[in-house]
Length: 351
Image (cartoon, rainbow, N blue to C red; front, side, top):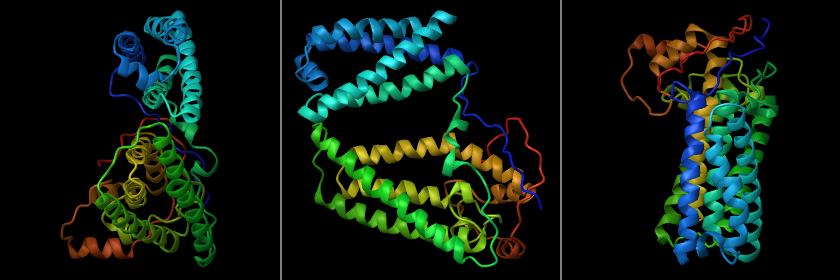
């Protein structure tokens, strides 16, 4: 059968009924927060030291007050002037964040200022998207290895097993070793580390081992039962409802989040833990809706019945009827690749 080549258009919309207004409200709040921070910088020495280090606050304020505080206030206004101000303040925020990060890494000072600016940069980019586009364009994330495509069908799972092994080596190496080590180093260098009991590292090791076993079991189910791999660009050709997928719809994501938290505990790095939690929010709100729309378009009623039976995150341990057990154990629905793409906004299946 010919593969359905498109997925339904899904964008991450805020809960507010007017996304543009929400973006403008954020910039208004940012303007007030920036003004309050500058008042604290000039009146509370500990705030100045923690966020600016040895930088001259007068020289920094001469640029930051108009380009951050005032521009944030202007970005809250409607019309073209507000949109242009949003561009200016977001660009300035990104520039300050990068510059302050370099300064903090070289000197070991102003670490809390870097952290605050990283948060401001992320929120400013989201608000900029709302002001200019009326939505957060999450489809921009679906490129390269994250673009949804089915794997090439194979007679035996050997090729998929080899590909999955390589994917695990690369992604676990990056997201569980390289990135956490860099974040942990910066946390210490920027003076943000917090002493934790030794038992925290042992708990982290247990988390990592348990989550890794769950991840391996999930990957094996996708590879052997699904005729594919965990990578979005080589997705299974069959709907997998075996192994850990009997109990939760996203065991790979659950495993990845738990691994990230475990690595953070192992390294005694609260920033790594936060990084893992932020990553889970990004996956849940930006990637999962697209993935579930693709699965629903590809597998139709089979996937909808699966969503009704199995939750997204929290396992539902209950005794199934004999009919349900037989269906889950034996059915392997194939992708419906002839479904035409839709541009409607689907509701996410219940979590």
